[in-house]
Length: 293
Image (tube, rainbow, N blue to C red; front, side, top):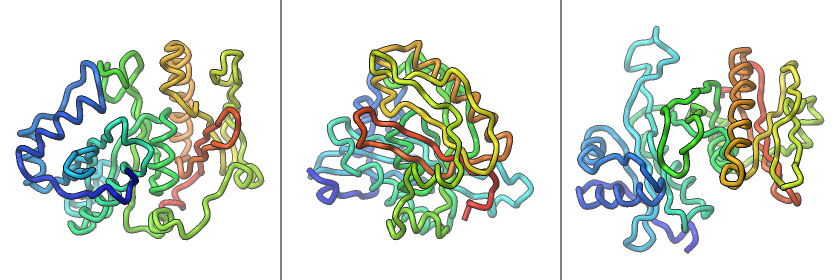
């Protein structure tokens, strides 16, 4: 079933909440802590947004968020600091890579715009290439906060065994940048464009004999206005094959991004080279805040 055969709508009843509870266990298998139905219902009826993606009558995806305040602007009055905190998005495993996650985010954006809120934030694992491609490249999100081990030790099969490091995404949903990205009105730039603009590869990775990507032995100093940071294109496969190697990637990229954000850089784009025999993935770092609009 294609994305245009999926319909998305608000969830309101306790029966629908229990479907979300069941779906969470499919999306995050193992010893995961799920959000209970009574809390989902309370959020949905008190300023939160809970949307479900349906294939026929079957729930195959959801997104959950609630109102919050922007901690980065403590001197502004509360009403001017309102944001939407997007807490969870999940798609049933056999329905992934069909554009459902992006569809849920766009539907969430439409609901938040009706509330008069202009900022949506959420977190994701910076080593997950699929999520980076949607969050940064397609939706136009930005990242300038690195949250080391944000949720502590997690016991579900997706996260167990590694520190739960996260990027915080800022999605300024009324800006021309976001409008351009979601409409596709401007062709996206590729790796060659960034390299020709002077971007340096901060951590050029090496492909091992086992076809697993290994972190760079030496990391370049951040300099100039543009830089590229590489991550594995399929972190789940790498993690399943070699947990120690996955942890090496976690720790190296943590150091790079923490230093970059402290120095005033932000993540503004993402490039995935899917056509190569061994796909490669890169974040684009830009220095300065002029790209926020």
